[in-house]
Amino acid sequence: MNFNCASNSHATQVEAGTLEMTDRHPCYSFKAHRTYARMHLPVAPRCNISCNYCNRKYDCVNESRPGVTSEVLTPEAARDKYLLVRDKVANLSVVGIAGPGDALANWGSVSRTIKLIKEVDREVIFCLSTNGLRLPDYAREIVQLGVKHVTVTVNCIEPDTGSLIYKHVNYQGRVYRGAAGAAILLQNQQKGIEFLARQGVLVKINIVMVKGINDERIPEVVRLVKGLGAFITNIMPLVPAPGSAFENFAPTDVAELNRMRDICGQDMRQMRHCKQCRADAIGLLDEDRSREFSTAGKKLNTNCGGCGQEQKVAMGGVR
Ligand code: CLF
Ligand code: SF4
Image (cartoon, rainbow, N blue to C red):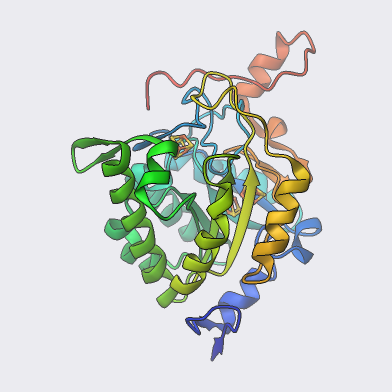
C-alpha cells in the first residue's frame, strides 16, 4: 500500500511500512524519542570534503557535537557490537551510521556493515548520515539495500555561500576549492535527495545555522529541499569547534535558532529534539550509553582523573 506524504510538494510515494518504521525512529519522530533507542556504528572514518566548522580530529560535525571522538570499528566488529548492544538496550530500533567522517566516503565498509547486520536481524531500521557528495554514485545501492532513512547536510543552495562554508571538496581524484567545489557538492546533494525521495526514502536535511554566513538564506534552503521531496529539516546550532576555521564564531543563539525553526516550520516539518550526538552514540537520545560499550573508553577511564572530558581516541591518520 502507498501513502501520499502531504507535507511535500512532490507528493512523494512513501510505503506504509516505511511510515510504520518512522514511528519507531527516535530522530524522525518526536513521539518515539523517549521510547526507542538508536545505536551509531562508527565505521566511516574518512571524509571527502572540508567544512569550516569541522576539526578533523573529531567526529563529523554535520551530525555530531564538536570535540567528541569515537573509536572506529571494522564491519565485522560493528556487527558483533550490534548483537551485544541489542541484548542490553531495550527498544533498540535504529542502527545509524554517522561518521566519524562521511558515510559515503567509506561506502565499502558501510555497505558491508549493513549487509552483515541484515544477515542476523531483518527488523532493525538502518539510517545513514552524509554530506551528499557521493549520493549520485551510491543512492541506487542505498535504495537496493533497503535503507529508508537518510540524512543529508545541506547548508546552502548557491556556490557563493558554499565557498564560505567549505574549504575544499575532493571529488573523482581532484581537489576543488571555493565556489567550484561547493558547486559540485550542492549539485550532487540536490540530485541525490531528489532521487532518494522519489524512491520512497525519507530524507532528513540537517542545516548548520551560522550567523552572518548562511542564516538569512535558510528559508530558501528549506523551500528547495521541500521541492526535492525531503521529509523533515533539522536546523542545528553552530557549536564552534576548537581548531576549526569557525572556532571564533559565536555559537548560534538559541532564540534565533528557534525563531528560524518557527519560520521554516510554516513550510516544512521541523526536528527540534536533536542532541548532536556522537558517531558511536547508543541508547535513547537523552541518555547516551556509549561509554558502557566502548573498549577504548574503558581503557581510558582507568587512567581518568575524573575531569569530565570526552574520551579522545587517536584516529591514526585515517582521514
Ligand atoms: Fe543517527 Fe542521525 Fe539517523 Fe538519528 S542521530 S544517523 S538521524 S539515527 Fe538524531 Fe543524533 Fe540529531 Fe542525528 S539526535 S545528531 S538527528
Ligand atoms: Fe567534518 Fe563532517 Fe564536514 Fe567531513 S562532512 S569535513 S567530517 S563536518
